[in-house]
Image (cartoon, rainbow, N blue to C red; front, side, top):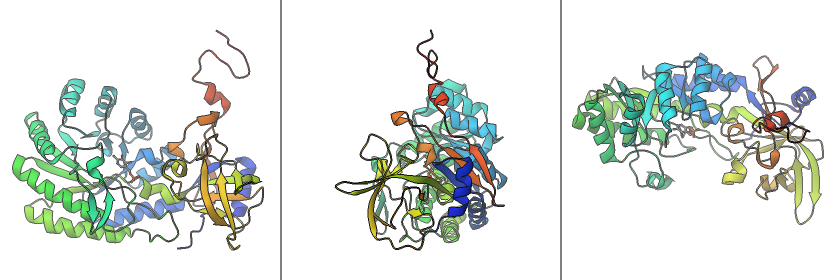
Length: 423
Ligand SMILES: *Cc1c(COP(=O)(O)O)cnc(C)c1O
């Protein structure tokens, strides 16, 4: 597939007059079309709800777009809960799927009326001691262990993952929670990440639905929802075939009708906690080439760095790059595209074939809409960039300003910028 940016050179030049690069840019139209298609694909399930994984793109302006379509928020920390509250997402519209959870976070989630998804059986006691009761609606995270395979392909390794309860534990947890007064139960599992196949959700659904039927039989609890969590991926590379959300929804429906309906569980709601799928393709990092360097390799230095997008440095992840205005030019130059951190892994691309890049060219780094800006950090005293929204009418809205040195200094109470110690 030819990966085409959702923004042109002319538009970026116009934006850069007001907002210097680097910046993250989001595509309102793409976000809206995608969330509509997701809802449509699961419209067969009356209780269906997407709880957007806030950690992927924790920007209230973008969260509000999803909120218009009835999406809730999946939070895993105190501040993510605050973000949800700030846009008016409260109560059962919040899924609190955390792990290694601090007491304050449980207390705040409970105060907001969030659905609490317990990562471990020991958290039952911890939660009860913290908030003084067990909520009527409660969810438990399941981890069947072993390898998660689709045919012979290993998708991921749940047996090596820190999350969730074993098969024995989740049964015991449901029994204990029931004795303590819980009435409505949910099951959650996240067994493979960034899957680019229409089979992941249906396979996961089969595991969870069968487990749900067993749990309902063995413990007598009422299972209200099954949360398929995140994990639907996006095609980062041009050769990958995008997921077909319609086929995924239909696949889950088949398993639902095969496993849950015959067990008398046709009232179970399907929840999702998608992050990457909701936002990934609808964001990009726009950066300018500011240096070229010819040593043992050919380097293009840009004004963004791993602080703006950590995935290549952290996971060796591929992010497609388009040189704006040179979309049709032959990719006959081999470059490492680097940032300025004092870290040799600060490279957005290694040995990448690209058109000849000149200083001043704008580069679009694709698919940064999820787990992009949000993973940012401040190494080397680098500041986080702005986030801009390209609206459906073509206008641009600043949805987060760039950090300034004052933001960096804000946590040193006794220092001021440009001055020496003042107290
Ligand atoms: C990260 C995460 C998600 C979202 O994952 P994606 O891969 O972005 O879809 C959902 N739920 C939980 C609990 C997570 O930790």
